[in-house]
Image (tube, rainbow, N blue to C red):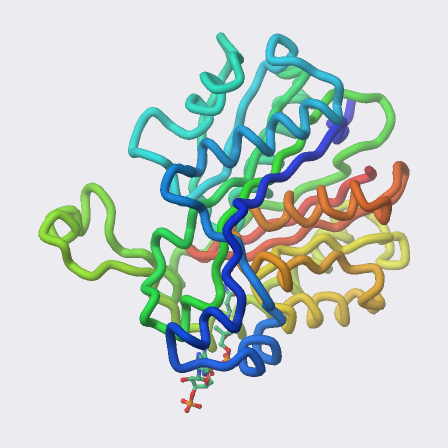
Length: 322
Ligand code: UT7
């Protein structure tokens, strides 16, 4: 039994922030941002938008494509590192918005790897026969954590959500997943304020924002993803020539190009959306997937490699027969 993607969906907030807008906010240039990251614009959640509201819209799209209703869904998993509130968790908020009842519904926080972790877990529910129709979401309102005076980070991030519906199938679907992490690197990329740590500083109005040693993150990301590609192909027992599409986490075009080079895959077989929405953390892979499914690039029967890397560090991959 396999878990097969029955539908995909996405949501991006209407507000767009271009590189030209950022030139007016910090000491940066469109040229620097394009050449160092590939990003041209990003979407920013409005004051009334939340991670769960964006997740709900992406879920509606995916449910429509899959032809399923709220009563069909028996599992909701959301990867997010920017929940609306501490609790109820985002998956239960989505449940309530969509009228899904009496199902497991939980969120998991593995930063940019949130969607791949959520997919890996939902895959196991389906293979074990514990789910017949899973809603899997990556959603993020990460710009709320950004310091808009820090040019080293504020140019990178954007908000959005993407979703898939998984159903059991005897035809191949998700072929294999790898989920991994190494907590020794936590300090290189963090937002070190929360509930049991940094809460008093937050209440006192301390300036809190994402902290990143970009250059060091970059190097570990490229090396880890290179290893991950080999591990994933070996675990699935397939050659790299079998990959039709690389659907990578969208953090930096240069990191994506390095992964494509490792796979000896021409860039025309790589789904690149970082240009249009920046780094949307857990939302980036399902956003890219839905984009390429809906514009007809990704077709039924093709083999996709999803790979991600993020804060923690966490990383993961999924090899998928679409
Ligand atoms: O999604 C989770 C994982 N996150 C990532 O994968 C992010 C990984 N890191 C990166 O993508 C890149 O490291 C960045 C895009 C963040 C930075 O690119 P870089 O090529 O590593 O640049 P750098 O940090 O080494 O900085 C180079 C120069 C510095 O100036 P000096 O010291 O050479 O004078 C920075 O101050 O670029 C400067 N700089 C900027 N200049 C104009 C940094 N940010 C900006 C900016 N505009 N926005």
